[in-house]
Image (cartoon, rainbow over all chains, first blue to last red; front, side):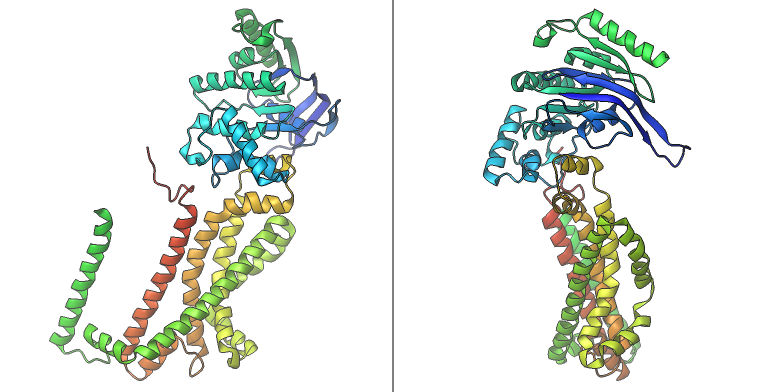
Length: 245
Length: 261
């Protein structure tokens, strides 16, 4: 679905001579239908990698390619990033508006997307009337409304409380299974990555590169079994190794 | 209850002050060409009602024209600035120079260039020049303060520059625009009055001219009546722009929504 090959990225900075090397030599491939977590300490360039994958940034060297052609991409930020002047339906409809779909069809699809994330009946609610979790659900509905093949999420649940985070995680898994999505999910939580992903890419601190590529035990794809202690241990060990190195 | 108190106490205070004023003028026998009593001002207002209303209309129209002209040019220029850093860097200093130069100082030039036969155009230009900058700087700030992630998201879905501006940047800058309009509307009136004073005798027909003329003739009661009308006009401009702000932002903006929890 997507392949990054020897990607590096440097940001110019006024404070530091030569700027900051965010990513060095990052390579990974994600196949169709995979649920992959990109795990690393904060500031390691996870978000940069995700922005490169979305095409919002261009790599300095290396390449980002899509072997099966560029898919429709959905993106979810750490913050809900909603338009405060627009109701939930209008927010969820934004991608379709920008693709110039007829208003009726766009409205119907946005309403369906909101219903799928559990927000039926909240179409006319403004962001300030919604809780943090519900705002994130609107953001998720907006990412799904254009029926993406590839869903990129940048620590989407990091600002939420644990109960909300777990419910949203389960809902995301359900959507992933129903739509046959390919998901790249950035997180700094070992628990979250072991719970959600079929595969975890562990990154080193800045400049970020891939330190370990851990496939979680087969049979986990159905997500019926809780994550095993061993899985969590192996991910945590890889992360500690990456940080210490 | 609190809303009622907001009105009752200022009105009570005004009645008290006006009463004291009336009493003081009578008690110390202050000559009317120094300080007329409120009753004399009301009499002067009634006697000059038609001419004062004509002057009020003239001032209101010229101020409105100047304000609307400033609104359109300032928003257009802020949109241009948001599209090109180069244009912004080149033009912004001149916008600042325009603002820091007092209107009274430019007024004679504008009056000569536009010509005294088009006095109203010259006055509205001067009113517009002073209202221009607060609108420009507020809208510029608003267009620049858009959530970067939201812009990235729109870009991801293929938004054109125009769509970005129309769907994301302008709505996001609306609170700044309305704030700039409130400041701009009130100072457009100040600009208009200043320009009328600068235009001097016989040409201008607004309230400022009535103030000059009546004070020259020592008809101070009429001066006060015109002054009161100017104050009311200023309040009306501010109130109507505040109402517009409330109407447009009440559904979503932090400054006006009432918290339900």
